[in-house]
Structure formats: C-alpha cells, structure tokens
Amino acid sequence: MTLVRQGATLQAATDQGITAQDFKKSLIDVKAAYDIALGTWPRNSQQDSSMKAFADAIAAWELARFSLENSGRKLYEDEPLWSDIAKATDGGEGVTVQAETYDEKNMGKKYIRPGKDLARRLFGIANGHFQFGKDQVLKWLSDAK
Image (cartoon, rainbow, N blue to C red; front, side):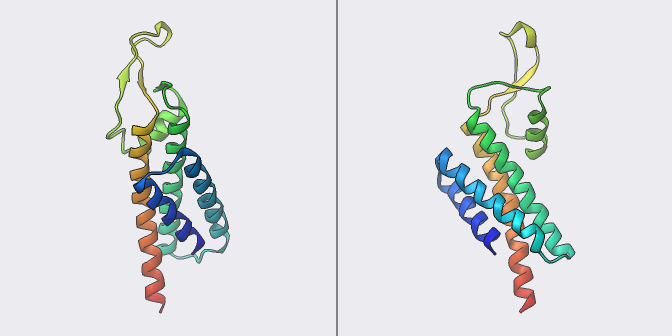
C-alpha cells in the first residue's frame, strides 16, 4: 500500500502544483515504493495490469521531470526521448511540434521544447495511468474482503 499512498500523494501534488525540487523527491519515493512492490506484489492478471499502469505512470512522470529540467532546449525528432514522449502522449497529441528554421545543421527537422507545458501534459497522462492502477488495487482489496 506504500506505493499507492506515495503515488496518490504525487498525483495530487501534480494536480495542485508542485515545485520541481519537491516533484523530484516525490518521484524518487514513488520509484522506491514501486521497486519494493515488484518483489512482493501478488501475481494475477488484475494485479499485473495495475503494476503495468504504475510503471507507465512512472515513465510519464520521468519524462515530465526531463521536460522540467531541460526547459528551453530543443529536442529533435532523431533524439531517443522524442519517441518516448510521442509514445507517452499517444503520438504527440497535445504536444506542440515545430520545424527548425534557424540551425543550418538541423534545418527542417521537427523539434519540441521541453518545459512546463509539456510537463503538465505528461503529468496528466501519468496521473491517468496511476489512477487506473490505483482503482485496480482498491477493487482487488475490496473483492478480497
């Protein structure tokens, strides 16, 4: 249950507003709780789907952390994190993509600018994954009574 509690705290904080420093610390706590839960979590299809949802939430929160830490730089389409962000956002839905016009070396390449807007989009995605996992766990606990 520590994972659910830690994740719910981070979920609420990203909905309400959180500093980058507090976000990083909370994400560390969630990742540690997830690692512990992996070794102790009961194995059945319902629980496996909740653990996958938690992993997807952590991945999106990690991308949000990257976005906050790299605000202002350009992330080009041939960089590895581009595809991670595209995958997390359902093909880039809601992400502003621009084409390079100033850098001769990268002329015409597509890029995105990490920052608060992208982080907010990723927070929403992460929170959705986490909510699904949390709902699954709570249902499983209620069914077990």
